Length: 503
Image (cartoon, rainbow, N blue to C red; front, side):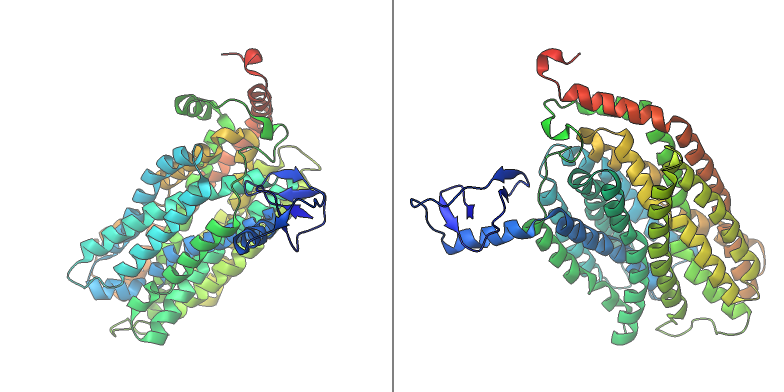
């Protein structure tokens, strides 16, 4: 029998010996007492919420929110040719659209990291979702004379989305531990490729169904508001470190300056963050330009005509989106399973699996630009394998951070890793690729063939960056065990009584 804090009896509760409170903690169950009075309707509603606030349900809701996070981001990319035609801008101008989004995202991330380590995380998450959903909806009504305003709106969306990416993994980290945490983080980070792929599909499908690309920006806001409401109602706010050994008894909190100094000295954290930057560089450039590149390839092969209509063909965006969804699923599942298996052989399994997958991905991504001129099907095969290997390390990288960073500074660590990966990665890669492509096109007579080749030459920068990321993961493997041991010792010190903590 369950009992509310004011002494009323709740009907229909579990008969287990423990009751989950609103904060996520467990308290002993109370036996029936004749002095207890029946619950009011409001109490029954709260009791129903408590029963739904399981860690697994929270992880599912947070993963759903992460899907919407990336779906909203790549809906615009799914209708990129239509936006380019509508606003009449160049390749570099379109690259600027994504670059402004990422720049605002990375600047806001450290701020939300600081807030996430000190204030109610689920409230921050919900406010962020509501904000970006409303801005996305309003941006669909911007006329063609105000492209700068459309770019600005994407920057505001980036601020809202940075709150989610910085904070939500830390809640999962405080609800699970060890292999369970690896699995749940795998599900959470599966949302990156899955949401990205669905963004392409939603953008293209909504455009075709409505006959107007603006409608592609009017569906995801409704889903975002739903996700924000679910987070407020059903996601608990666990104590920081509650899932870690001794984490629930943390008595002390370090200052923000101390946190930053510790992270800068954490070699595994620094090198894995640099490796994440390489992944972000490649995925940002690919997500923006590969559908355009394949569309130009088909024009060169004379299997398609250049877009001169109001509504451009969505075939390449749909196929690329579907491939991204499938490869994301395969990559995250294979990555989690491979890491669990390799941990039985070596304790350095996490960074080593990431390094091998990165180096393998670079090979197949190089092959895309070799075969695309003659075979679109061959290019899709190379994209499939290359993306699977590239997505394999998403969840593992987050798990590395959880191992080497203590719970009270994880939101800050996630935020600054996000800041670094975007600053050195996809903040500049879409614009840089577009700039290189424009520069190459201006050197020679403009033709369909040269438009295709110039973009391909620009995208060839990505495999070299991916190889560099693999090297950073190998460097992470060298220091991983030492940094994990240091984190365990620091956590032990923070759980001691004040008189025994060294200043």
